[in-house]
Image (cartoon, rainbow, N blue to C red; front, side, top):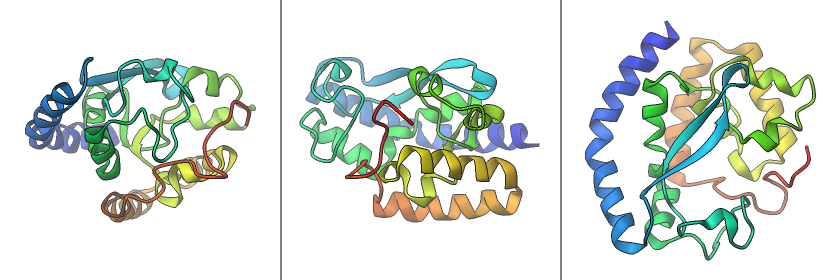
Length: 196
């Protein structure tokens, strides 16, 4: 049933979002060189790797410049178009294609990079028991402003208690967060610093 909902809702949302994605891609290309779609290898359900799709919000090759994978508020690598896309979470719209392809779900833990997964404890590997999502329980309870370990615990809580009611709560809270733009950057205590 979840897969059917992902295909139905994700497919409709992707069709509705297509003009916005196209416009954003054009704006990205006008402002800076490089492909407007950013691909990053992430780990999904049962440890399977896939390429996460996002609208590029930073200068081309940003992972090899400055803070690398860490992104802070006012990061000079973020473009003007990218700042707007991040603030509105529109950069995540291509994730809908990952949902339609079956690599992600609408709701679940955010997919993480292989080096992070390699450091999971046995308990934390439980985070890979479900498909990663565009939004999730950790996303609506602090996002990247939370310490990494706390985000994992929130994701594990979701997996242990997931239900239609909880999914609806997450969707509702996601709307408020997207409109408010809270928790986009790691701040003083959030994020991932190479250890869990």
